[in-house]
Length: 256
Image (tube, rainbow, N blue to C red; front, side, top):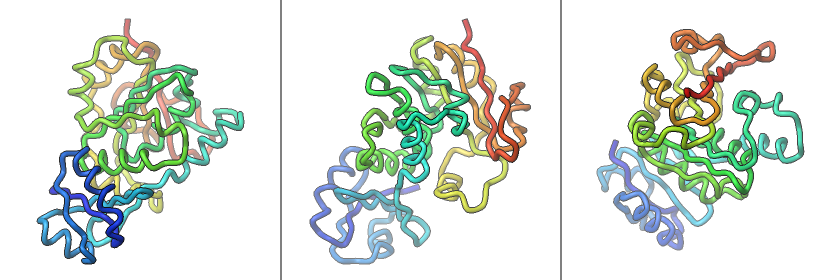
């Protein structure tokens, strides 16, 4: 997919868009009052990252898809208010601690990474890995504009998760998390259609899971859609979940 960066109609946004283009090594396409479709056609781009000082969006297939913290903001709010993690399946599975280093190997739009950064606190850090250049750029720019303090602790890396895990030292992070694409989409999920359109569709490979267990100090968390067919494929047992839950999780101990 060919990607370029442009600004909103307001020419004052050009500086922010040019800076984003430089950060991601992408071409900049001047807006000059033109519709996004015209900008994309003129630049030969399949999609446009539309960036201003306060907003990041992806223009794809004739529509703008703005990055928003969405439900992650509510999840962070609940966490900071001290509500029990059982209300958040990811937090219950990950059992994160202050100061943790977390590797989110399937970043997507960064919702779980944002919650993980809040749970790990000021002394923690989250490395979010995303194979899709468009998703990686959108999420990085969205997080950079997010008002939540935890967003400052999420570092976005565009890479193949298996290759990056292979390059990391053993026991170099506390928790590794995977949220691979589910076999069946969930209608109406905010942002899910965009992620399904752009994200790496390959299922989690057993070899990648095994390497993640070597890189983790405590455990690896794997998310799946109910009823958890891919967990079964990987030989994993789902943790107990609430009746009617649309997501299930497995927690696998680190190796060694």
